[in-house]
Amino acid sequence: MLLLALSTNAHAFIDPACLDDNGDAPEMRLEEEGQANFLQNYPALSTSFSAIHAPIPHDPGTGSIGVEVFGIPPLACDQRLVLGGTKTEDTNKTPAAPRFRLGFSMPEVGPAVIYGTLGYVPPMTVAGTRNVILSGEIGVGIPLESGLQLGARYHHTLQKTVGEIATPFIEGDPPYDDFYSAATLGLDLMAGYELEKVTPYVAVGVMDASTFFVVADDAYLANNTAPYVGMTGSVGAQALLKDKIELAGEFYTALPSFSAEQRALGSGHVYTGRVRVGLRFGEPDA
View 1 (cartoon, rainbow, N blue to C red):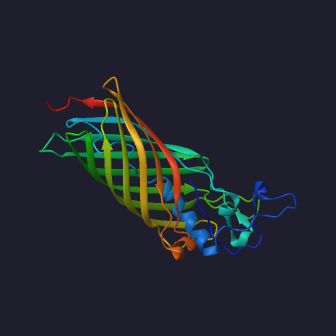
View 2: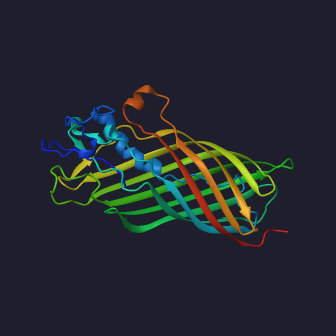
């Protein structure tokens, strides 16, 4: 979906939209190594599997099937420049992407509600790249008599992308299919408050991301020297309409590293919005 390549070709191409009236490009936001790391970490953070649900997503014995739409904020020109500012990458393929979701809460065992969710983006070509993303979560929620809900969840995502991720060095050159893969995993703590039909919630967690990127032009293997490890957060709400239709939305962030050195090395961050609609099925436990 978005990424960067490294090479020594001197005749690189800069997006005309990134040039000023004098034909000059802006300075890169980070040093070369940091820019490369950031552009590898960014798509992994953008496709990570956040909750988009309350600490208890469904009543015990019920589930939902639906779709989420996760935002992929565009990157500025100074974030897309590489090779000392002589080349831009076409990272802004799409502003958002859909992911199918299937979730189910196990029959009640004691005070806790145990649930799981699968997410899937099937192999489909978008803006010249073919992407497949498989996600999953397992979690537990505990309802309190006050209406407060507490919970925790583990999530994992695997992503593979094939296509022209790194742009040609010379405008008009034939494209090559590059290969990018990423994995994210994390643990969240959650809290929510159940109102009549709406449950607002917050989630705070930690997440790890790893990436692998091969540039097909010259079979270059891009090394990520600062894989992302950092805190994540969500603020959102889930609603149930007519006892069948689930609606949820959240603001999601993977925060920049606390370490100034890691920030300079491009460990990455993202701020985005996500929404979900689902159809509930099953009969709740009596």
